[in-house]
Image (cartoon, rainbow, N blue to C red; front, top):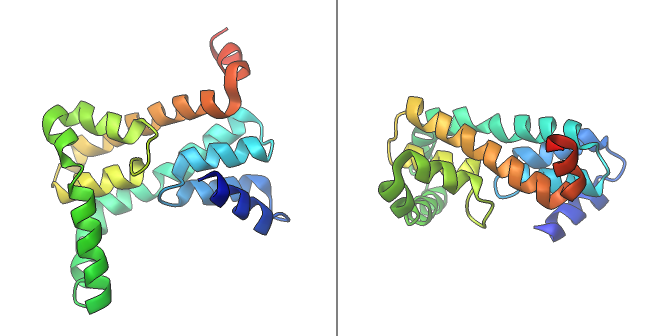
Length: 167
């Protein structure tokens, strides 16, 4: 992930740092985690970075929860896109055991623990594929994003963040 972020930062060096951090936070895989790393590398002040990354990570979630099944159904009409959608569904559904076992808390932890293949995008996709009602999945994903923000804040901004926030 660091390589991708460094490439983006170098490629878009003339861009406004806050806008770049926001765009990174919108993308799957990178999300808030990548946005906070980029913000720290670009020396965006912590609180500003946190707000930008949270907003960027949250914006796609309602669209995924409400529309992804319809989009996937439409894409399956096309051979290549259909194969990709089937691959994505199969790969995502392999992670369902955590949700089946732990329910709401499982979805919170799945989104919140910053590991490869987890995050808001994947959590929303998984919730949608499992047909978890939006009233139940949206709060779990939101709490998970907050948990990821706390963990990544510590990882990217370190002890000074912890002291200034709680000290």
